[in-house]
Length: 110
Image 1: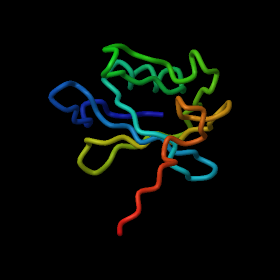
Image 2 (image 1 turned 60 degrees about the vertical axis):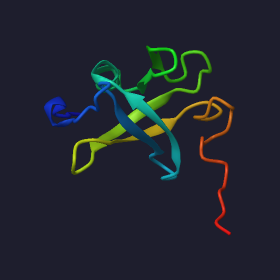
Image 3 (image 1 turned 90 degrees about the vertical axis):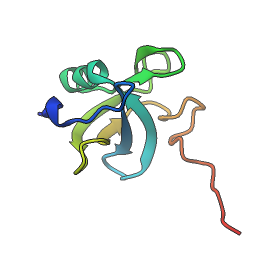
Image 4 (image 1 turned 135 degrees about the horizontal axis):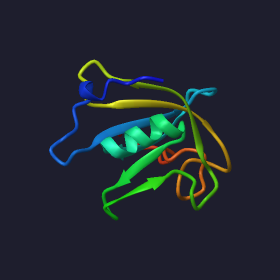
């Protein structure tokens, strides 16, 4: 898996949004932030690593929950400012609440 890190446009805080999708079901599981270090670790280890803005630290997805994400494919968009990470979800789910996906709250327009 190769990504030209020079092609990635990190924001002013050194972060880029990463949309995580289940490679089998195509369901969007979560959105998290990556910095250059977490992106490099993700590419090297083939498991997802992110940057926590609230804790100001790197985190390995599933380190405490056991619900890891094996990276199958990683893409960046045409502008280079958003990542798409296709994973095999292991464990109960991607969300810290225990849900399979973080996107479980429907917002209806009236």
